[in-house]
Image (cartoon, rainbow, N blue to C red; front, top):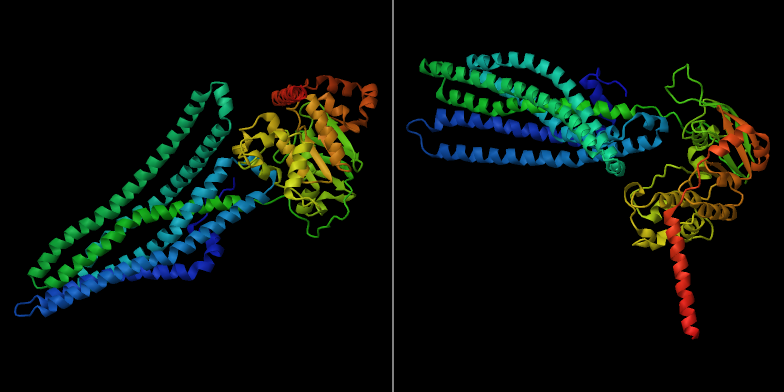
Length: 619
């Protein structure tokens, strides 16, 4: 994570300026409305002073009293109107800024390379996208405006108090010195605690998300209690931090409330003495304390407003920690638009090491040379951890090569626009990721427009090729919502939906990271056969963990110690390469796909039922 803890408040505010600039006129109108409401409130004590010193003197009529009451009523209505105007001016633009910044944040997350997401916990990103921007919006719409209005209100109020009585004004002003000292200390300590609180809240969100996603594992292994204990510990740490925040704010609020009240108590005694010795009129004394009462509210509000401001600064810093993260995988300065892509894929001396890997550790890929002819299917095999998945991740540029190059039809992938590259390259991973949406939307996520075919045609063909016809038997067919990450489906069903998604994209290069590991041999063979027929001419690179997958490939590449050790047909390598025979012997046994077995049994029962019906009809 980037360190922004040493930034000043003004530095943080400047970061938001480009977003605030379009709505600045309305924010200023909101601030002027808030200030106008405060000035109107300060004008009411002056009416009291005139009323007491003139209209309430012996021998005067009641006309002055009614006039003063009317003026106070009008001023009160004006104050309420200005408060309502403030809210109308700021609420809509502030929420617009929040939406704009949240959208920009999500767009940046989408653009950032996978290596960024490898380092950042999802809960931290979630808290920055939601809670932090919510803090910023509330401070922008209320905290910032009221902080300025409150400061000016206190300043104007103190000036009015001095004009009424400089002696009493000095007493009130004397209370401001310790408030300033305490406020400086409060700003430092509360800022640190606020940052710690928001970071801990992000960690807590990560714990919740991981527990929800892994709920089946926790239940299966009976580790719910351990997960709860760990979560309770994190929650307790956050509670302690929040208590620390509350105590800091309580101390500051105590000071800013108590000292002005003590000053007013002292001022009351001094004021009565001044009135007794004709040093101050009764009206001026009443006006002074009425003004002090108006000022007391903003003074007491300084604590919460300061806390809100410091929290907003922390939120801004946390937001820009992500926004400042550089995108290491970008479009080239002068992109080459691919035309007539054939699908010839070539790895030329490819080296790769993950960011942050110690210098004394070897590269994951140490000079890979491999050529795939257009339209062929090549299986990639090797022992666990040899870098097969890493090599596949380089093709759609989820990571960039450390050295060497990968070319598509002779063009370096880094010279192609990312959108174009990922249009021509489709991926299906072993670790299936589906979205909380319908089967239809998941399959058509990256579907290409195909001449003469509607979306329903593309969907039907993709499901048929992936042997995922079970989707039509779901409660709402292909419009069935499959739940978060598709966990309402079995492993084999999720893999077939993910494969259908890759097929629907109609790519020129298909990259498969053992996406059929949960299928039985028969289903896998049917899928492979249909892939060959429907995607004829598509170059396919597939990580194979089972002998049946290897046997279906045109050629096989053996990855060993970060390099391609041998390339040939399955029969050739079996006869000539001892390490290949060792790898092949270590590949997993064929799994049983219970879903497919049940579907096959259902089909068999249906055929038997149809045969019986036909026999009865003939009889």
